[in-house]
Amino acid sequence: MLILVLGLISATLLVIIALYVFLYLKKPSKHEIKDIESSEQKQEEVVQKEDLIIFQGGEDLTICDILDAPGEVIGKSNYGTLYKALLQRSNKVRLLRFLRPVCTTRGEELDEMILFLGRIMHPNLVPLLGFYTGPRGEKLLVHPFYRHGNLTQFIRDGNGENYKWSNIHRISIGIAKGLEHLHTGHDKPIIHGNLKSKNILLDTSYQPYISDSGLHLLLNPTAGQEMLEISASQGYKAPELIKMKDASEETDIYSLGVILLELLSGKEPINEHPTPDEDFYLPNFMRNAVLGHRISDLYHPAILLRKSCDDEIQVTEECVLKFFQLAMACCSPSPSIRPNIKQVLRKLQEIIH
Image (cartoon, rainbow, N blue to C red; front, side):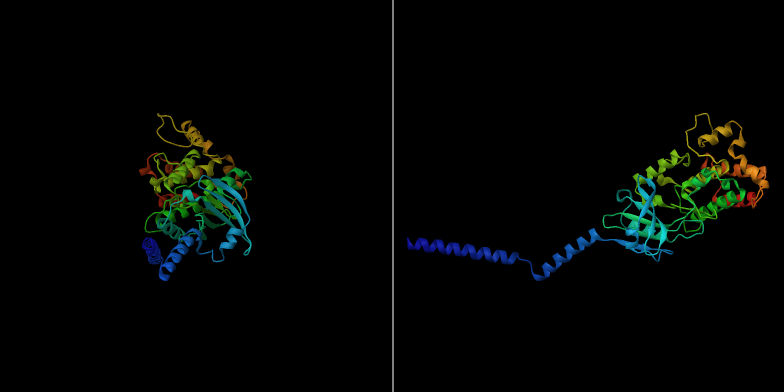
């Protein structure tokens, strides 16, 4: 009996010793503990990382300024929201464009595109001053604020300034110069992809600045396609453009042509699809006027009525007609026969001077 008890005790002791040795061997070393802690810390940093990239003109930006700035929503879309914000420390008004994380591209592709867009500088392009990435993947683009609003508001305002030939001259040539820089000022063309009067901002001297240049390049295919559908519903989409990824210099030229026609007519280019027997594609009011041979319907009579008033540049009916013909050439149904941006700019300068 005693032998049996001693045997049980010995077996129990052996089990305890074996368990202790097993647990000791499984215990991580000090180095392993440090590696685990370091790995967990890195994972936490990835989740909580926020960053601000600053470009020329945005040297006074800080993350706190951007996040603490009281903002007023002035535009909204499926892929983001546009705010007019007052930066407290510098007391400057800026445009903050928030992009929904689910709508943007990710990784190195996005970083490279942001750095590329931040280097684009031209007197008629809205510059990118800064780009903020938040801990939950939110993205904020920081731009200057232009107090005179956008070209759509200017055209619809009805205060008479939009009928001055000098303003039409300044705005149309400024847009063409900005687009020329995008198409020809770099190693390869930068396609705007969403050119419309709402994306032309004006300062107090009616100098135009093209906004949203290349914005579609920051969006994933689904969000980019939504942008294209909105453009189509507003009358700016070239007829051959089906997918945003296929946007080109020629589709930008079509949109420019619609804007030029807007400047002449003062009307909104709401789009309707043409019937099969029509041999060209134009927004509704423009198509009806041309088919009815009412070219005078495509420019506002106040443009010519002001020619003897206080306008800096005198205008003739011949100038208006040539301007209209150029806009129509830009809106040609065939991309191959639309003028390129250098030809558009040269023709505008010949017509308006």
